[in-house]
Amino acid sequence: MIDAHCHLTVYGDKIERAIKDIEDTNMVVIAVSSDFATFHETESCIHESDCIIPSFGIHPKVAPHHKNRLDEIYQEVVSAGVIGEIGLDNKGAFDESILNAQKKVFESILEAACEYDKTVNVHCAGAEREVLSILETYNPAGVILHGYEGPVESLSRVIDNDFMISIGRGILQEFKDRNPLWKRTREIAEHTPYDLLLVESDIPVVNPLTMPSELISELIEELSIIRKETAIEITAQTKRNLRQVLSSTAGMQKYCEKLRIVKSE
Ligand SMILES: [Zn+2]
Image 1 (tube, protein in one colour):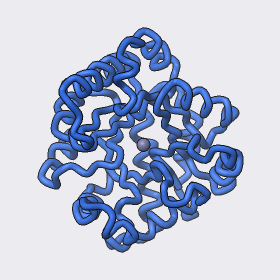
Image 2 (cartoon, helix red, strand yellow; image 1 turned 90 degrees about the vertical axis):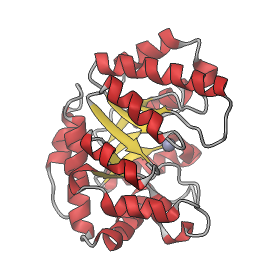
Image 3 (cartoon, protein in one colour; image 1 turned 135 degrees about the vertical axis):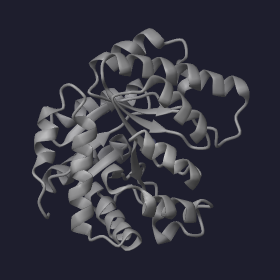
C-alpha cells in the first residue's frame, strides 16, 4: 500500500510505532511537513527508511509567518527529496494580505522545485482554480493534489494536466454529516482516472492512535465500493501511480524500486 500524504509527526510519542507499522506492512509513505521543525523531526525519526519519503513544505496556513525566510526555504527545497505540503488555503475567509503572503511563499517554493525537478504535494482548499492556474504557469515535474475538493467540473482541467489526485478519508461514511463536501469528494473519487489515482491518510484526526496501514486499508475498502474496483486493483494501481509521479524526481530510486514490485498484499 501507499500513503501519498501523511503527517507522521502527529503521532507524537507513538511515532516509532507508526514507523514500525509502515515498515511491517511494506508501505511507501510520503511524510509531508508543515514547516522547518516538522520536516527536521520527520527526517531525524525515519533513519533513512526505504519506506518513508521525507517531504519539505511550508503549509499555507503558516506561510505568512515564513514570507521573510525565502532564502532558507530555497536551501531546504534544493536538498529535500519531495516538496510539500505547500499551496494556498482560502477556506478560512482570509483577507487579501494573508492570501498574498501565502502566494509569495507558494510561488517561491514552486520556482525552486521546478528548477530541481521535484515532485510537489499541494494543498488547495477553497483556492482550487487559483492553485491550478499557478501550477499550470510553473509546470512542476510531478504534481500530487492532496485532498482535492474542487468543483467536479474542474476535474477535466486537472486530468488534462496529468496531476495526480490523492483521495483522502473525507469520503468515508463517518464523514457524511460532518463534511459539507462529502458528496462531492465521493464524486471526485469515483471519476478520477485510474492512472491518476492516489490515496492518503492526511492527519488522522479521528483517532491519532490508528496506525497508517489501518487508515489506508479502510480508505481503500470504501474506494473499492465507490469505484467498483477491487481493493487489490486499487492497491496495485496506486503503487504504480506513485512510482510514476516520483520517477521524474532525483534520489527516488530506492522508493521507485520498492514500488515496482506490484503484487497482491
Ligand atoms: Zn496535510
